[in-house]
Length: 217
Image (cartoon, rainbow, N blue to C red; front, side, top):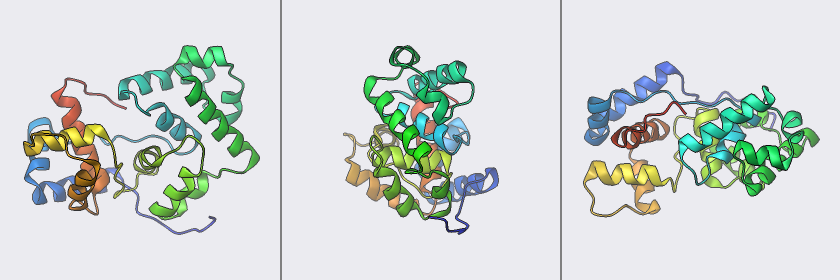
């Protein structure tokens, strides 16, 4: 995984180009931008902190995950494997880590320190290979891997399959009677290539704004 391949990475410029192209192609996405404005260019840092926030976000609200991450930053200042492993169970629980998530992040920290996990190498390999590498790590499923690729590596065409907020946003924008299945959502999202990560941000923007939950996650 030491390839020096240069892979597409969203920048502010390419992000807004993607928004413009998607709005021309899809009237539902255009309606979101027309009503709420362009979505923020939400990103996370690469490496260990990015994995931590991705694991914290599993099955909880964005606000809860961000609140726990902020508490972690206050507790150890620099979020790195060594500092995280120095925290005991009681401290992690007070920060907002379930026992399971604490175990997952500790496993990642140990893996990085022992050289078993190389997060830096993921930046130079293709989406599918990076995803496959991540899901081999205990506690990182496909959704967590995809959100890391989307937010931390800023890949332009990653789609976090199974995300309920995205499915609900599609349901609302298309006037569907029921929430579409993951398979149907993925099929719809295929029409947004090569900007699926941009489309996801537009849909999250709709979901949050409709509920008065604008966030800078």
